[in-house]
Length: 242
Ligand SMILES: [Zn+2]
Ligand SMILES: [Zn+2]
View 1 (cartoon, rainbow, N blue to C red):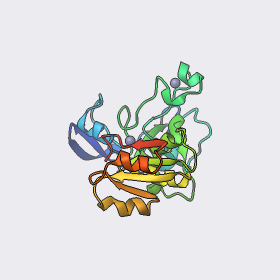
View 2: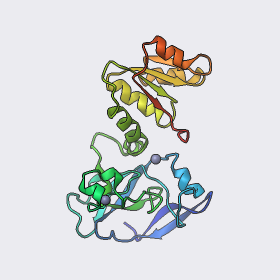
View 3: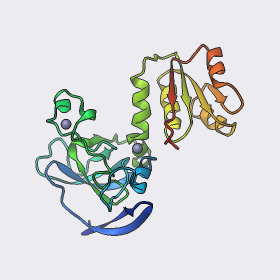
């Protein structure tokens, strides 16, 4: 690999620039990743618009898949050439009260990828080893990347819900997150109602596995859900989701 790599960074609110950055070695507990795919999440707009506190310049991107090409000191359990993913939560510290209780998601020292550290809109990124996940060989990097934020958000909402297979589940909004929620819900065995505005989305929702499509601009969605027996869970599109 050459001594520089290409990155897309934000220099001030709303402004991107393409730059060549010097290749650096990963620090203790970090790995260097040769990026193969990076999803584009709506939360990246927080980096681009500066709505998170950010020290510029900053490379956005927190749905990253690539291959490890260097290990920092003290990294165990990971190997060079292994394909890995990095999501929004950049890695837990391992010693705070939450980590010690096994609640890694709520780590007090968690950094956010693309906000506190440079993310995946680049050929190379540095990541904390504690933030990595393995990517199965039969999943392409481009298909895997969006699962690291949009996918895990909707998957965890469904798998931690009280609904059981056979229950009616509604997905409100078939956007970047909703279209994944529909596929998870169908494959988890729920009876699935997709709700969106207009008739254009009906075909997509059905193709992705929805049993019912409710056009919220033409009908009272709540009444339709009640007529179907009532939804056990409604996965609602966060207003920032596109
Ligand atoms: Zn911690
Ligand atoms: Zn995201």
